[in-house]
Image 1 (spheres, rainbow, N blue to C red):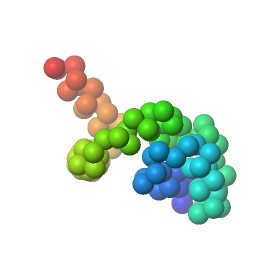
Image 2: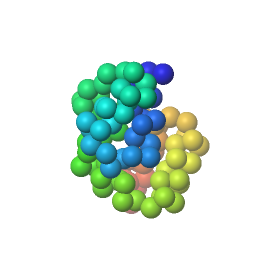
Image 3: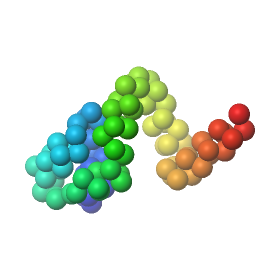
Length: 87
């Protein structure tokens, strides 16, 4: 497992955790050392994660379904940007 996958796996159910808590858990579970910058690059800042963690489970499920349907995060982001521009 690479560092990016380890960060995502740890944060999946713990978006409210601080960067340090995520780093500690990645080290404990996967024996990998990651930086706070890596955590921010992979899953966003703690402040943004706190805002996201307030979204309903249904909204997050729909977001995962959308990503699965598109298959690529960058392409999904581009499609969302196009949709926003069309409003």
